[in-house]
Amino acid sequence: MSTAPKLQENLEELVELFKAFPILQGFPENLVNELANAAEILNLPTNSQILKQGQINEHLYFLIDGQVGVYVDGGRVSKMQRRGDLLGEMSVISRKAVGATLLSETDVTLVRVDSNVFLNMKGAERDFFLSILYRIYATVLADKLTTTNQKAKHFEELTIKLTATQAELEEANATLEKKVEERTLKLEQQNAELVVGKRKMEEMLNNKRMLFKKLTEFQEEQIIPLKSFLDEVRKVHPGEKSVNDARKTVFEVQQLLGPLNEQYADEQAMFSKRVLLADSNKKQQITAKMALGGSGVELDLASTLEEGQTKIAEKNYDLIFVDSTMLELANKAREKNANVGLVLMTSDNITNYLPCLKKLSSIPHIVSRVESDRTFTVKNIMTTAIKLLSRDIFGLEKYVSWGVEIHSQPVTSSKQRPEVIALVDSYFEKVGVRRANRDRMRVVLEEMLMNAIYDAPADPQGNALYNHLPRTTELALKAEEQGVVRYATDGMLIAVSVQDPFGSLKGNTILRYLEHNYGDAASENADHQNKGGAGRGLHQIVENSDLVVFNVDPGKKTEVIALFNVEVKESTHQNPSFHLFIKS
Image 1 (cartoon, rainbow, N blue to C red):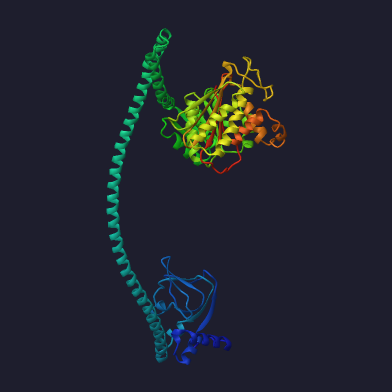
Image 2 (image 1 turned 90 degrees about the horizontal axis):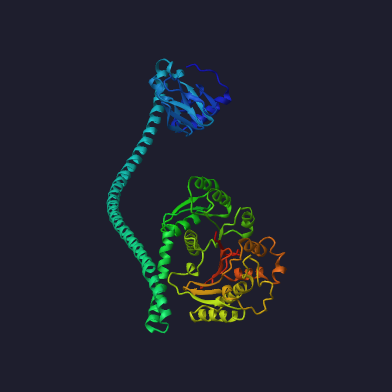
C-alpha cells in the first residue's frame, strides 16, 4: 500500500490516539500503524460542516474533543461527544450518500482517515484491511445497538409508567367530572335559592317602603291635624284631663313615628341620585361600594383626574366625592352645576390639602377621616350622602344607631353651664361610660358651651354681640339667643352636640383655625393660641374628640357634634378628624 509520507512525531501522536480509542482496543499494533499512516488531525471551529446530508463521503472521522450535532432534514436528532466516537462509517461502507449532516457545535478536534487508501488495495491486502474496517463497523454498530436497546428498555419503562399515569388521570378526570357535575347542580340550587331570596328581599323592601309611606301619610293627614284640633280644644278646656291625656298620647305617637318618617325621607332622597367617587385609592373605592351599594344611588368611580373630568362632562351628578389629589374637579363640577354637592374626603395631613382648598372658588364639604378605621369610614360615607342628598345636614341622630333616645337641655346662661355639664356627665356615668372618656367629653362640652354663649350670638348684620366680654362675665341669653345641648350613646359611640340659632361660624374661620393649629404655622402660633379665644377652643374640641362635625347654615344655625369611641382606641395618626358641612 502507498501512503503520503508523515513526520515521525505526527505519526507517533496518531498511533497513541488510535490506541486510546475504545473501538480499537485489542487491535494489532501493525494495523493501528497502518491506520495512522492514512490519517490526519483536523481542528475545526464551532459551526463547521463535517459531513453534508446527500453528498458522497470517502472518509472516516474519529472524534477527539468537542461536540458534534447530527441533523437529519434540518432537525437535530442526536449528538456525539465521546472521545473515539466514529463518524461517517455507514456512507464509506455502503458507498452511498451521507444520511445526515454533521456540524461542530463547539470547537472540535477530529482524526480523519482516507478510506480510499484501503478500498483501492488489491488482493489479500485489500481483503485484510476491509476486514479491519468491517470489524470497526461491527463494533460501532454493536455499541449503537446496545445504546438503542437501553433506550428502548427505558422507553418501555416510561411507556408502562405513562400508561399507568394515563389510567390514573382518566380515573381522576372521571371523579372530577362527577364532582363538577355535583358542584354545578349545587350552585344551580343555590342560585335558585338566591333568586327566590332576592325576590323576597325586594318584596320586603317594597312592603317596607309602602309601610313607611303610609306612616308618613298617617302622620301628615291624621296625627298632625289631630294634635292641632286637641290644641284648640285645650284652649277652650285647659283643665280637661282627657284632652291633656289625648295630647300626651298623640305626642308619644309622633315621637315613635319621627325616626321612621325620617328614614323614609332619607331613602327617598337617596333613590336614583347620581354619585361620583373620584379617588385614586382602590381600597377606598371598595369601601364606598360597600357603603352605598344598597342605598339606591347610582355610583360611578374615577381613579384618575382625567377619568373624573370625562365623567363630569358626560353626566350630571347630584353628589361628588373627591380625594385631595383631585380637588381640581371641584371647580369643573361647579362650573357645570352650581348646586352639585361637593365633598373632599381625605386621610391626608391637613398641611397637604389646605393650600389646595384656598385655590377653589368655594369651600366644599370636608370629611377628614382615619383611613385605617374602615367601619367608621363606611358609616361616614353613608351619613354624608344622606345629609347632602336630603339637604338636611343637622342632627345628632345621624351619627348614632337608629332608635337611640336623644336627650336635650337648653343653653340659657353662662351660670347654667356647669349644671349642664354635670347633668350630661351623670347620664354617661349611669350608662357605664369610662371616666377617661367622660373627662374628654367634659372638656369638649365646656368649650362648645363657651362658644355658644359668648362667640355665636350676633345681631342681624352678623356682628358679634358678646365675644368681647371676658369669659368670667356672667351672661344670660335672651330666649331667641338660646341654644340646645343634645347627647346620646348607642354603646359604640358617645355623642354630644351644641346648637345655636345664629350660624355665625364660617367655613373660612374653621379652616383658618385649623391652619393655625395644625398647619406649617402651628408652632409660630402656639403662644398666641395659649392665650385663649375661639381658636384655642376649637383646638381643644378637635384634640379631645375622636371626630368633630361642624354643621353650618350661615346666618341661621350652627351645630357642633363631638363623637367619642366607647372603646378607647390607640391613636394611629396626628391629623385632626373633623367634618365640615355648610348649607348652601
